[in-house]
Length: 496
Image (cartoon, rainbow, N blue to C red; front, side, top):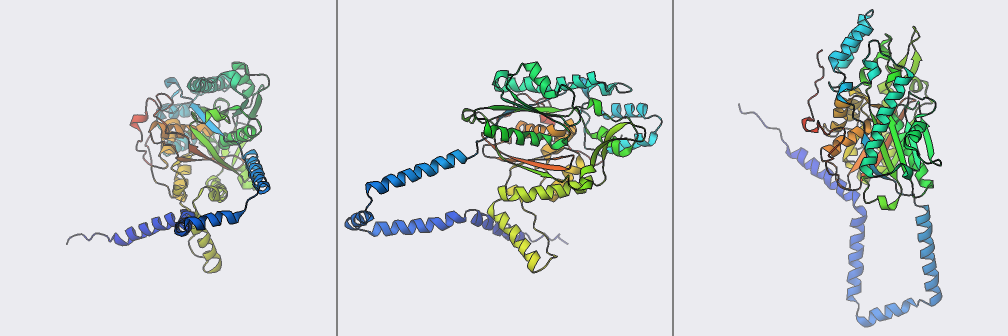
């Protein structure tokens, strides 16, 4: 018997009905105004010259009325422009690319684990199972101190890693933008787990001999979402300091935080976290608008720290043997989902088109009044954004967001490939993902980007950017020598 093809007619009709609905609702004002304008134009054309002159004379404007109206218009315009927030531009950014000598293939990682945990083979097997399912590739990197057996997480080695990562990013950014150290007005450095004295921001000031009146900030302990917190802080500072440049550094220093114990929940970060960092140049200067890559549209921050489980789901502590590490709770994904839900509730009305907001409202009303068992409507965020940069915290994080936001494989490609090539680089992972989209030549003028990050506390933060100009494929950057081979297929399990 010949195989019966499915009837596509109903689904095609439904698709076009949905498209028609979206177009109608999103352009409702246009559809309402056009008939009114046409009707007024027809009435005016029907008037004779004498009738039009009589209509003009009937208005009777005197000099005082004209002056008062002019003053009112000028006053309203002045108030509007004075109260309007300054536009914040992302001039450019640079990501750290570790040298080949820092790479840690699976075989090297597992060999070191067997030697370090030789008295605990179950922990070694656990790490191997995590690595097999992690989504990481063979080219991720760890700092030199972790390559030793046993690792040597000294203060000197940690400072050395910080200097290599941060200074490399800043040098690359200055070369890209042509900015000089004396032109930097605001400096923000975020690094969650390494907070030495003097601070990392002071280290940058010392290295580049920044001005003595620079506004310098050092953020620590805020997890993988600290990069967007730094962007939010820079935005607030740029609102009150006109004609300024802000330099934001996002990184995580691995050297002092490599766990050498045997607790499973604390071994997870060893398998996922890798070297990385990014430097971002923001500006509120109008002359930078033409060369800037992106314009900041929204930053939305959600903090669930009032809940005890959320507060402790990513927790630095000592194990029974006194070894310090990061404990990742089994409830992490559930808590992340709740934080994301709260964040979406806030950001949705700011970015979603009217068609999606109405569908969400009607479904909510229907569930409240008619049937509580109605399936809740999940807004289609693909109507609001062309690109998604989801924090590459792990395969489970990306899978969960792809499922909940109903995203395609292409929408999460940048996140998966960043996790594969660089691992979880903490707060800087969002910039590697943005770099991937640019390296693929997919960024066009007017495109909207949604960056989503999660961090300890527990926090979910979002930033929305709008592309200022079509981005040409960069000739350098972290993806320069490997972008042609991506995307790659990442199997569910890589047998080691």
